Picture 1 (cartoon, rainbow, N blue to C red):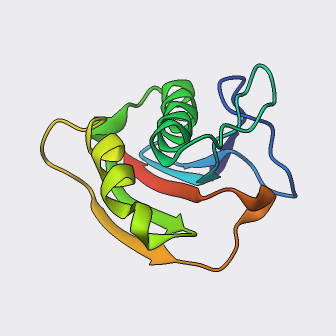
Picture 2: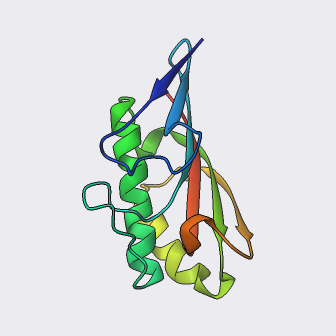
Length: 127
């Protein structure tokens, strides 16, 4: 059984997908890839990779909160980046959202991302 999580704390999906799915018995949350779109203004945050990554992580934080979870519940992340030269700056911001016991992760360089963003992050969290 799954419960669809739709968050007011993340931008509306731009395609046929949900923000996240919580899999029964309520222990696994699969969060769709998030980009740096401000959920209130709808504006993309693309000025620099640090601000962009911060907004992505804020969107993930909002979705986690709607499932009664936080960053400590994340067990796996997938990061897609348009320019791997931005890796260190992205990684600095990303890492600031965790307090040890980091999740497993892969970072993949890609040619292009939706809305021409520079970074997209998806996560799996467990209660």
